[in-house]
Length: 287
Image (cartoon, rainbow, N blue to C red):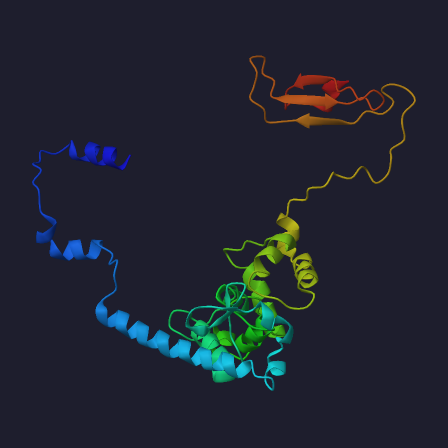
């Protein structure tokens, strides 16, 4: 499809195709190619960092497995399930074990939360990323505690904020009375706000707020069956005993000069005999 579009576009022009070798187009060729092998300096730096970190983990694992420290790690029943892999590191179900010793967990948490590439994720996102690589007891709770103490995350997060009483009024007004919100119902308004905010009895408070809006009460479209008459009228015993009537006026004139329809309804049989009349006719003409 892409080739066909280009052919259709180029058919409108007179052109000549000339071969341009890739080695002559140095800039574009360099940008379009992805390196399969990292540069030597970057690779050497990565190996140095990896070797230092792995050596640090080895020492921490040996320290944590000592008899006097194993109780603090809460892994006494799981030590037999550990798998010893390359560089002497221990894994549990393909996840590297991170101990309390050697400040390993703090290094991992800081790297997953405070670096320029992680940009302070929430506890759910952070746990989902870390559990693919690491494991330690009470990992999820510890990550939630760590994220909860981060002041930067508390300032920039936009999910499930609990606004104050004054802020609630501003939030409700902005979600209901602005020119872009156009007075939504309580269900729509709650569905939109719960994605960004939270407070106790939020749904009930939104329903109360919408119920007090006079504009919404006027323009809302109720999906309810119309109620019947408040009082059942008395059914007549004979035909034409009770007859309501009305006029349909200002209609286009017929060739005979009529522009009004006189509607008379028999209340007993509910049959409306209609008669065409002229607007200028008086009541005496209908006798």
